[in-house]
Image (cartoon, rainbow, N blue to C red; front, side, top):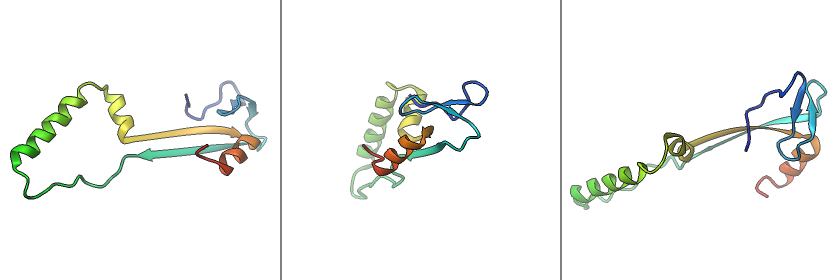
Amino acid sequence: MCVPYQETSPGLLICHRCGAQLTAGEGSFYVVNIEAFADPTPPRVDPDEPMEAIAADIDDLVRRMKDFSEQELMDQVYRRLTLTLCAPCHQAWMDNPTG
């Protein structure tokens, strides 16, 4: 799990990828911000579809959402992570960010 950028003790940080200890002020690590958000495109609505069908779809969505916590619902819409990476892990991440 990624935690926000913070020093764990004065001057000491941990690489989120390999766990190496990092020292603030040495210039030996990177702070990486990742922001992810759900598709912002509005849903397509068929203008010929009866309003009852659209209302039923909305009711179904609301019913399914009740099974999730507020945090789970928010995480499906927007998420921001801040990572600290040592120089080697940063380079590996830059070379293959999805891998």
